[in-house]
Amino acid sequence: MSNYKIAVLPGDGIGPDVVKEAVQLLEEIGNQYNHQFEFVYGKIGGVAVDEAGTPLPEKTVEICKESDAVLLGAVGGPKWDNESPELKPETGLLGIRKALQLYANLRPVTLFSSLIHSSPLKREVVLDTDILIVRELTGGIYFGSPRERRVGEKGVEVIDTLFYTEAEMERIIRKGFELAQTRKRKLTSVDKANVLESSRLWREVANRVSCDYPDVALTHMLVDNAAMQLIRNPRQFDVIVTENMFGDILSDEASMLTGSLGMLPSASLGVEGPGLYEPIHGSAPDIAGKDVANPLATILSAALLLRHSLGLSEEAYAVEKAVEQALEQGFRTHDIGGEWERVLSTTQMGEVVRGNLKAPIIS
Ligand SMILES: NC(=O)c1ccc[n+]([C@@H]2O[C@H](COP(=O)([O-])OP(=O)(O)OC[C@H]3O[C@@H](n4cnc5c(N)ncnc54)[C@H](O)[C@@H]3O)[C@@H](O)[C@H]2O)c1
Ligand SMILES: CC(C)[C@H](C(=O)O)[C@@H](O)C(=O)O
Ligand SMILES: [Mg+2]
Image (cartoon, rainbow, N blue to C red):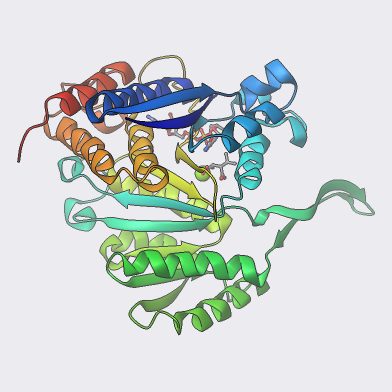
């Protein structure tokens, strides 16, 4: 029997609901494959502000660093929207990403074929969508300083700083090339080189690094065009590599190719140490506490955790198959349900996926 320690940070809003389903699913994987998962819970986000006066208690960072992997729900909500920056839930999330040096955020955008009609886009547009967005996660405008609001001669002024070192660009771009080598060998580097100095360096670095990966076809695309091309013809993309904020925005957009924001998982990886796994969506205050959130993005994040941090690819595949099967069986949560008859609650969808793990259909 192998033992793994997993830090669990449920966070705010729908975070605890969707994380609960992912944890129960991992327990089921443990039973079936003879693994022992020890779950150690930590506070992050608004709940941590309320209980400990900070969105990222030191204890939480410790728990994460001592674990093999971290599973996170979501942070934030209207209750904390007007807090000062150091007391904002989102600061806790950025803080844990930075503390664990999770520079590479992998956001797979994969359409399950039975959800082809759940996307607001036409069937022939979204058919066979299979994109990996590789987002830089610990630099850029999210972390640069100075960052401030002040009063100048003409009134209130604000500054956010977009800062990157060449080395930070190179490591994420290399990651993009390496991941492209495991897929269709096409890498689209997304930037705003027609305006931003940071993007001009990004493009230079991508061109230089591409010499080391002659088997990967590199193309450059401006971010505004990329936003449009994702909707016009998503099949043109294999791997997209981009900086922090562009990746954030494009991945929410791309999620609708798969039917819902509630379907997209993510893996955040560093050079060493535990990876962090979370759905790309937020705390969804509009549906929090109603047991209606789609838990599949978090369940699929647990699959990524098994694959990337624990090296359990068979188990990861089993989870993905169990999700696929639930969708093929016609089960939906409200976000992918539309007029569907078999709309399940968060809890029920979790149960169905676990049930499929217990009794897999041999195909
Ligand atoms: N990683 C994170 O923790 C994270 C990510 C994004 C936003 N946030 C925070 O979440 C809060 C709300 O932000 P927002 O409303 O802009 O974005 P959101 O992602 O929370 O919600 C956007 C819309 O998608 C829906 N949605 C999201 N996840 C869903 C799911 N699993 N199932 C069904 N529907 C789902 C919501 O109901 C909402 O209508 C903010 O405080 C924001 O900062 C946190
Ligand atoms: C909540 C916020 C800080 C976060 C981000 O922008 O990275 C979120 O939108 C995400 O995509 O994980
Ligand atoms: Mg986001």
